[in-house]
Length: 363
Image 1 (cartoon, helix red, strand yellow):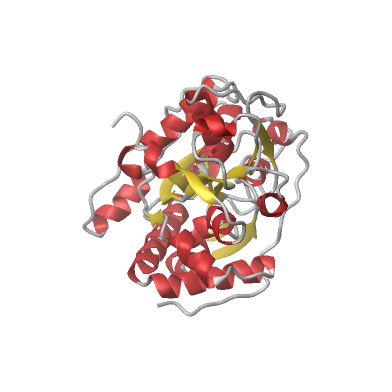
Image 2: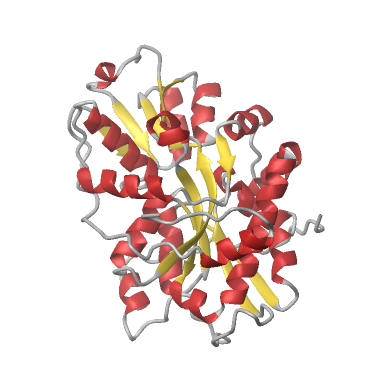
């Protein structure tokens, strides 16, 4: 196993919201993923140059964290690639960084990827591999046992239009309950930071939340809540994409050998995570602590881990479902996702390892 290396390699990018899309797609700004040493490179060439990679200090990004912490990415990329990492607290931040050229690739959830693809008219990014499936739930206080009990309550999500926000609003609509973007309706939905959600749940100012792991487990263990809806029960075979790897289209076109090496490192990391969950949990917690200054309680990490599946399959059917949900609740204009996946490099790497290919949309 590669030697673990943890140093001062992370910085949190604070990006202005205004003008980023223009900078990304217009002639006056940097091309997504562009860097000074970018030049077309054949896939057969040795990986070289710089790769700027973004990810979250979250258990749902465990293969990314382990890939950095235990050196899987560095080993696969080789000495010719300078790996620079940045961490983010939301998919919106990560996609903004991809648009501005601050990162070349990032681990994000489905809805940020969809939004970025739609906003750039299908130009800015491609999904090149899956990472994590599962790990989201609606956790509520005592006394709420059925959808009808939610009338008049306040529920939180991580952010307006984010993956869990769309899931909650779509599920509420399916139960005949209205929740407006402004916080009105039968159920008031309050987008806020996950840490604030836990505090608000404990002090009783909200009645529940639809959140990803480890926050769902924390609301149960630390907040005394119970799971009303496990999102896995809403998807075929219980599989839905939580995290996948996206790459700036321009970077993918110019440096396919680097992207394939990154994918190889991701496969190595996923294999390590699945082969030794205890060691992977420790490495993930080390990474979270190094970034945030705080460790997860062992019980929280173990509880969250049990609800997650780590896989390179991007589970495209669930991405299409998330898009339809967002459109149906008026949080997204209709968008054609054709071209959002480029799985050729992943499938080449899988074939070299004697594994079956994964499919994109419409397959």
